[in-house]
Image 1 (cartoon, rainbow, N blue to C red):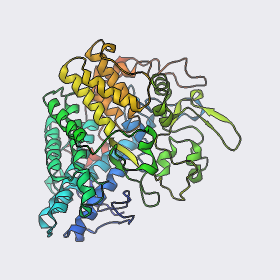
Image 2: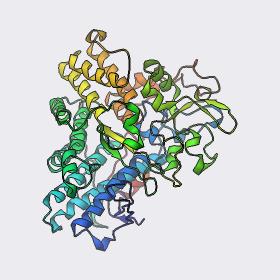
Image 3: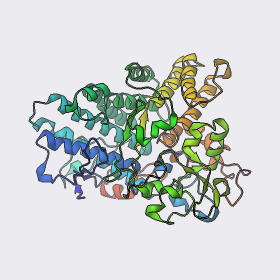
Image 4: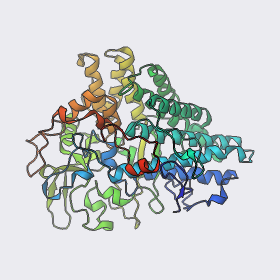
Length: 532
């Protein structure tokens, strides 16, 4: 796949379109558009737009992003090195108390996010020269590009801090390549907000996609995706480091618009949310659609967290029988204690029996549990390197959980509306114990419960690290040094002891990841984050 250097961080302009969307790309793999074939028709433009979808798939789940379980989900998994006979080095995991060096996953995610931004810019910059009478389709393409650009920027800002604002692909060898980071992260957030506000006006709803086939398939980015992302932006701004509560009412309105649209709901069976036979169900707002033959989650990625019988047909015994990137034992046990029902059972496997010899391997004897939320159907063999299971990034359960948080913050106390939203989540999960307003002694008590419900309901769906960070430095230290992360009584065989970690060993600089040095070398105006 040819990479064309077009940006300030060796950002490559990739007109790559390898299908990770079964319906969107109609299972056709487009390799690239040559630079001379800059999009001139609506069909050309759609190819470039589809390439952004592919980049989002690379960014979240493709090969080389194998540590995404750790990178995105630090509340639930990979918070520490595993012990036992299959210990991996600290360089592969993200331990808040250690020096965060320039690991492969940082470099790849930083790189792929900027590729996604560059591709989005190519679409936006090409709009004026597309000749078509299909204005609704052109609007949809513009809305998709702006929503994706905002999404990639949003992740970069949450991972790395303020980012330069690049709205076009600069010419090579000129000063446009060297852009300084804003000194105030609000500048980046203002840019993200503007993109999402415009995307909301441009994008079709889920119903409009279904009613007008010319717009494309319902699996594309919809108005609800942009609304949900903007609500997340406002919630994030209300936390660390800005602590700006001025947009919480706006966030609530955005989420209520999704709720009141009648287009999304909690489906009855939690397991069916993630089923290959129930893709794009009424709970899904956005998922990376995976085609088992032409793109999606590669089994190398999945083999690092799934039980071996799911992946050994491709990798043999390469990964051994322990998960390379799995759930921490502490999270596994707390999850099981709090809710050992369908959510736990579908998300985590605490032991695995080798069908060849009958030996049982228990997670408690080592250091990580298997993550099974996105497992393939039993007995499924597709003969490719790719899993057919879609990867869910945004769903209606998160809408309800964010509304619970917002009701609590806006009430500045225990809110009956928030408790009702929590109980909707608990009821669907089949949990026998429901919350009452009197169960919570304070606003902080209710907020803690909401975040723990988020950890269980949305486990391994790429929200954990962002939820942890926006609660602030002091809260992060409290959580990381609590028994959620280490209990010397739970491990029976060499699991690594992290009980020595104290809050004083977790520097505030670790609230952001380090900028990869290659990008600092390429752009002399780009400044490294403090503490690295």
